[in-house]
Image 1: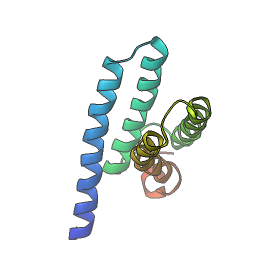
Image 2 (image 1 turned 90 degrees about the horizontal axis):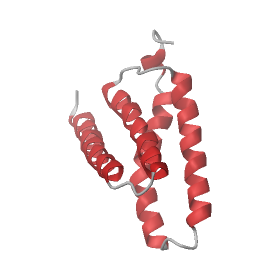
Image 3 (image 1 turned 180 degrees about the vertical axis):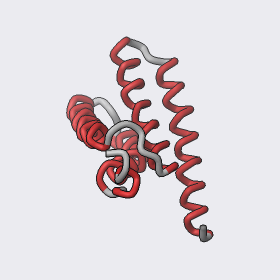
Image 4 (image 1 turned 60 degrees about the vertical axis):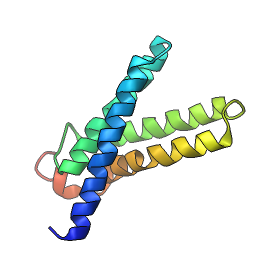
Length: 120
């Protein structure tokens, strides 16, 4: 493994660890059952991220493709519903944080056939 791939993998693991902590905090601080359900749904994406980083098939590729589409749909609905209430800087920060997770989900479901070759 060359130095660049080791650094990239280290970055993904650091992002994974931070995401786990943030997801646990969001579950513990949920103000309603819907907030808790949303946090659990987002936490499911961490399983996808873990599989992407490890290069392991977890579940079915089709499941992660549908999960990505649902995640994007819910994100756009959330933006539309909260557009006037949340400052633009906060939306930009949240988008910047979520983007790597969505990118990993996309790559995992659509761009890593070597993971899914034998599994699906």
